Length: 165
Figure (tube, one colour):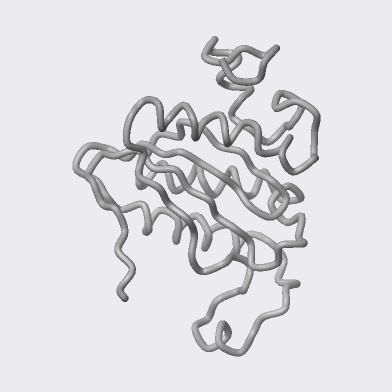
C-alpha cells in the first residue's frame, strides 16, 4: 500500500514531529536553535504558524500554507536539517542512517492531518495547548514556556484562566 499525503494548496495542517530518541530533551535543551531553524525556513518558504508547542522529544504545530502551495514536506525536511546541523553530534547513528548521511536525531516520518473546518482547527489548537499538561510537565497550559499560547494570550485569542478561549 502506498502512503498518500493530503496536498490541498493553501490548506491548514496539524503536525506531530518526533525525535528518534523518545527519552531525549533535545528540543527544549536547544529550543532557540529550533526556533531559529523555523524562522530561517519561514523566510525562504513562508507559512503561518497558527499554533505550536515544543516538548522535550516531540512537537505539535498547525501551519497554514500560502495559496497555491502544498509543499510542507520540504519545509519539515529543511527545518530538521537546519536544526541537526546546528547542534553537537552526540547521538548514536545507525548504519542505515550513516549510509544516507542522516544524523539520527529525528524520526523519518511525522504525522500530518488536514484541518477540515473551524471546529477541527479549534480541537487541534486545544490539543496543542493542553499537551504539556497531558504529559505532566505543568498543571496549566499557560505554565509551559515553549508554546504559542503566550502569543495568543497577548493577542486576546486565548483566555489565560482556562487555557484555551
